[in-house]
Length: 288
Image (cartoon, rainbow, N blue to C red):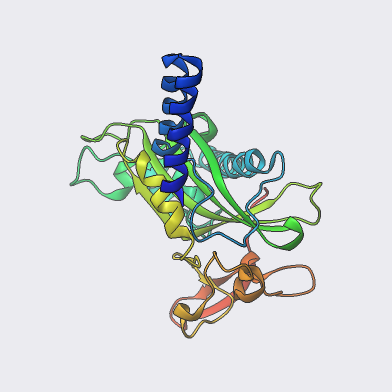
């Protein structure tokens, strides 16, 4: 479908050039269409027919802002905790407490980063805590939102660009992609978002053309956690509905009700005894 649209668009460009006799129009449109594909900003992709992908005004910006706000909030919490323990080794403290504020293990990896210039160092010695709020070091956007009925639930794909130097041979910027669930009570309210940690993609500065591939892959990934367990048990994950299923939100157990006011995706299994392998359900505490 996308290839057919590109051919049609280029044909229109050529016709415009012939009609107006202006090569500038052709060059401008060709550049715009090229940027559309190079940047991965495609949303009308094969496989999403029948799904609600028309974003309401402000939803894309709000989801991204919430993503960054959660990182900032956790950074502030960790900074306050570090200030109370001025004599600790920062790397060891962060490594030890990395699941204290973010059991999913997604956001915490964004208020610090690992230097890669010394591969023989321990992880703690490679940890660098960001000197300022993470939102100053990251740029994020989303170009893929799939809505449930009434647009009160959604599944979005968020791309994050990291501009800081991690050390080592690779040069910034760095990119990562995340699957995100959104929940709200009405379309007049912002989404509260929940990141699905298992579905992270990382690639270097030469990988921007991979975003469209990642978006397509998202259609087939139900999105399990990796650091913690979901509160529901799945015998055969291959039988789960894919995101391109128009009834995805009705069929997937993530979106079954946990109780009268919450869904399964808002809960995780917290380990209270490693030896006995005892787990209790606990809600994610992300503020945004």
